[in-house]
Image (cartoon, rainbow, N blue to C red; front, side):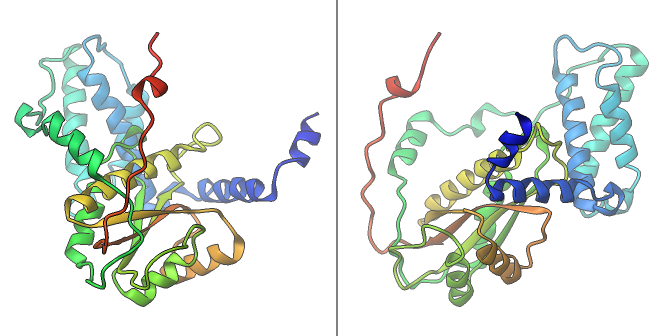
Length: 290
């Protein structure tokens, strides 16, 4: 029965599994970014435990051991903020372990005044549309960096932060990039900039976490699209459907390694006209309360 089921699997699905299998088989010691993602994952679990009201001695001890091992390479401490954060959390865990209990709830930068008013946020969400007709005005590199930074603020599974974005503000490269995606139709002649949202798949456990990279990257792309709107731009998402020739062309164009999954693309620029927004279905049709 299992052989018959496997025989019906599309070749593209087999190719996807093969890509994941190859990526996660690489030695961790050779993958700095993969190790950082794993460090963030383990420290995040420890940090969550320290904030739990039912924290107990020995909680997350396996994650602590793994995090200490990954923290050994302190040479990158000045280059990545992960090390400073990880060191602080691990020290709090060690202090709690010595005392057998937490001496206090870990400090937080939480401030109520940082929150946007709900009414303002609702109006902002309702105003966002997807445009395919852009002005010839260029997208500044600095604005593209702000858009990607917004994506980095999105949550990710166990704080792994595997996002990688390949951007272009050169019209020729942007158009060549967009042509690699399905759904690149109906756009204006002007393609100011593009982004290719990818995920480093090495830190994910397979097969249970097969779809986590897509989920994490989609959250980041959503944050990025909202920031683009806040900057007066519009971001049109481009669906990624793996096809050998297109994938080879896109990976060559941006030098995207095989261990990074291409999740979604986007065209971004200043809208030449405001697109109509289709009505959304009612909340009652989407929310099921039990």
